[in-house]
Length: 229
Image (tube, helix red, strand yellow):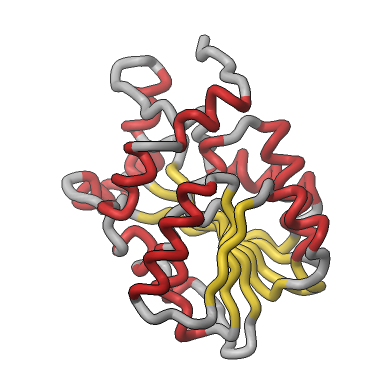
């Protein structure tokens, strides 16, 4: 049974080397999702658990305003420096608890993003955070989620402790589990796409997802669009 980590124990995992090494992650992880985003020039968007602000680099020219939110002051400093060097003028960043930020910004945003974040929180936190995220959206606003798929064979091997899991990850869910929890907190019109992994060699395995019966074992990533009623 996996040890339940305290909030402080998990916060301690998102500092130091983890933050400084994060920009080395490929932009392709997010840029490949662009065809699935419905963005308008007048959109005001929020990026929850924004990390180093990679999403801002990808979409800043497609929206009116980008707001990145993260509990880590280290990440916010890195994101601010990163976007400043890139000359991005319509992005701002705030160090904040997501629930507190969302409560202070109810009905403000057209679109919300939570990219590779939900796997770092437990179920009770998921419900609390995404219910708050829902309230921060305008009526008819849209949430986008990108996550590892709990049914992917690599994640299953990690569940059985045959492969190690990074210490930042506490709950990798299947698409159906994510859909159910989003419905519980009030999202509607939930659309799910199963995607290839963004890195080789796992990306080459995605065609195997067409196999009858075993296909779900080769769907590496989950992409979800969900609306506020």
